[in-house]
Length: 560
Image 1 (cartoon, rainbow, N blue to C red):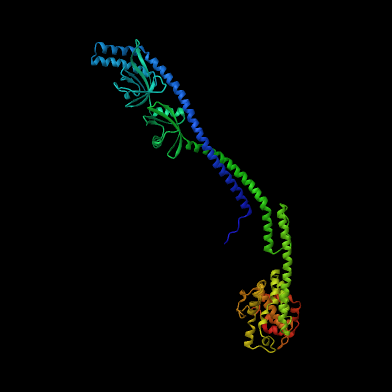
Image 2 (cartoon, helix red, strand yellow; image 1 turned 90 degrees about the vertical axis):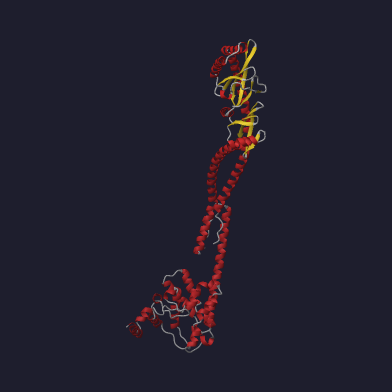
């Protein structure tokens, strides 16, 4: 089954929502591009600002740390212990036990200093830059006797990076002086480890990677992202695992570097999601408003059209075009269309009336042409039509069926046009062969009328008007339940007129006698209800039947 076009209200809503969807899509694309550009700039600026803040805070921290170290180097107890050790070992020599005891005294003093700070390690170096002793959580990375090389920071007085077997440390140092002579160096170090990286990440508001000699030693990145970072080229923007990152160097001591980085794509996603959430809220509100507006507009446009189309459909179904279509008053265009439709209907009604008049005239001409062939049957078709209509009204048939009876009865014998005159006008009774020829006229009449489309409703009356309730009729031998009611009416009217009309071989019977014959054959040859309807439709027929003694006698014999 072929689907029809969509309703106007559906098309109106579809166009409105499609337009809204396109607008939202364009806004989404523009918003995504704009957000990405803004986030890229924002993340770069954020890292730059973070780097400046970090540099300022670190500078202040290192100054404070340098001040602390300078204060620690002035510790008299530590100086005295260290001087005793060097003096004893230089002038008198020390036994193993004496050296251990003196070293223990110095270590105790260094541990006291370590307890006063939050540094990872406090190391005391001798004049050969070897570890004399160390204290603090990371003291194991600074074994006694280890020679320490410090990579100084640019512009950093006493600050640098020390690389030891246990890791890398950011250190701040100051010399120990006694009587204007250097007797060692005191270092305060912070381990460049994951904990330090975490502190920096929190301070900078970004992920942190610490490298020493180009190799990562600590990071807040996942392992796979850290590997991608290590393999990437230097630059302020790097693509890591398919995502763009903004990168900024927070600290550069040559041998050690600290990087801060943020994912631009991740930040873009977050910003886009936030923007999309706002956009979705706006879109839902827009869709709701668009739906309300579209429904109102669609109903304003389609409501009058729907009402007009329903009215036209009802008029067409009922074939009632007498009442004109009322203007809606909703738009000039629709009222103009309504007026044009009314003019068209008026024209069609006039054309239909002319066509109907012409059709009826043609049918009557055919019937007259048939009757003209045999003066004995002249007027037969008109009388059968009149009787059929009278029976139909008695049975309270609708006007449509009455019209079918009126015209179909006029044409019921049209097939006799094909019957030769020597058979049709034979003055004597027909032979069985001639009667068989006559029995062909219903089928011949139907064949003729099939060539005229507007006569299709009348074909059953032409083709079946000789069928009988007992199945002994022709041409098909139909039984009562198979015979249309209009056909049965024409069959009774035809028989009544045939009985009351004169023929060359017999005179016509009086109406009461004809009615008696019809009553006698009810149920077998004629439909009983239709015979009764004809009886009631012919005023005085029943009374005449009661006053005819001979017919009463025949009726009594028939019913005995």
